Length: 327
Length: 291
View 1 (cartoon, rainbow over the protein chains, first blue to last red):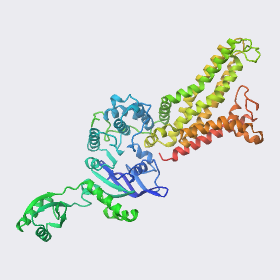
View 2: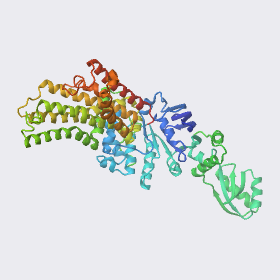
View 3: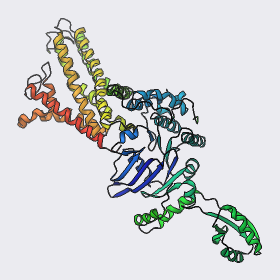
View 4: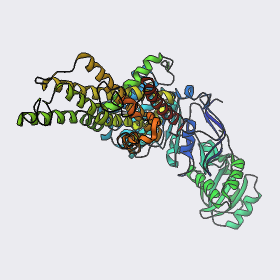
């Protein structure tokens, strides 16, 4: 598999504070990849490091196959990025701001300005000064600026900040179109789980400068392996637990707030066989519901586990080793 | 925002040639971009023009009013020794105002804005992520700042020249050689300060700090140090003294207008060292700072 971004042991310190602690990250090409983490987890720092805005203290990085920072210039030619909020010269128009970046990128880039403005729906307002733009318009202009690179890789740091629900939906559609129709790789950093779950194919969860887990959205939600679980409502809990404990269809069954939580050994379709087994044993089944694993659940699980650890760094390192899941 | 537009660039489409283009074309475009950024900074442009032009206007206006109201007192051979507002003498006085007093303030404003503009607007990182070398980003600021600075100074100089002729009355007017030398002196004096301001502002990345340091050095510290004779020949390192050495009109006691005597070569060397040191510091900071 080819990777748009690959890092090994990436470390960044600010004085005594370790912002990135040996990050190993692999972002497959042609995917939308979410980089999830709570505020202060190190999301923006890794983006800044990848883009050469700040230097790493240790580790290696490759962007679009080029080692960074040694061949950073070659790598960045086909990278578009919005770091934190998109910033512009407020006294210049949107078009003039793009003209400035186009001048820096190279003479041919100027031809991409109008298509980029059209693409983000700003062609009509491109002659207005940026200081009159709303946050949403600035986000769009930021994307237009990214498109001047004709990017193979887009790096977007909290891209939906300040957007209204309609704008967020349009943004999601645009990201999916970039990935599915144009073959670009989009790396989205966010603390909004729902956004990543709906937009991305794969994700990494980062906390306190460490990648805790990474993989496809489905894998992440299920906790690193495929877990088919059911919630059962029964009229005789003890008999049900005994019956399920003896069944080869079930690897685990226990009480929960919602009812009996049952983990299947096989495919989800075996739920009907579990039901039949219980009925044959004389247990009345009042409810049978497959568990839908959400990324939010998983996110809270791994980050709260870190919070419970006695010494953050050592403990989280163990978790990271244990839970590393490759996409 | 439209999800997909037919004209949008796509990753699968042939990529336009990138940054392998003629470095001259790129340099010209980057100069144009930096020039545009400065030109559209309305506040800076207005203040720079006011600082460079207004003193000359006031200078001529006051002299003309005095001459008109009391021709005997402010006449060619008046009691106060002042003639009409124009002529060579007033041209020389005006040149000092443009080159050594108010022109430098305009040059500092423009240079500092050029040095800090990208960082203070928060767009420096967006320029860095284009992959263009940081040194190139720094280098393009210098000619753009100089161009804007010199446009302002030339406007002030043109006003000075016009006033010198219009209000000359029966006094001798500046000759061609003096005019050209004076223009060169004005451009040199303000240009050097403008370039140093770009370097210092890029080093500090703080507009207020750079402006205060530059003005304090130029207006307060330099004349003070130059007046301390016990400092001896070390005063030759003072930039304003070296610049004044190139003045075509008499503005001080050290020959060519400086209060510290030095040879032409020494003066040139001092100017070059000041410019080189601050350019190097600004370039170093731009290359190494976190964006």
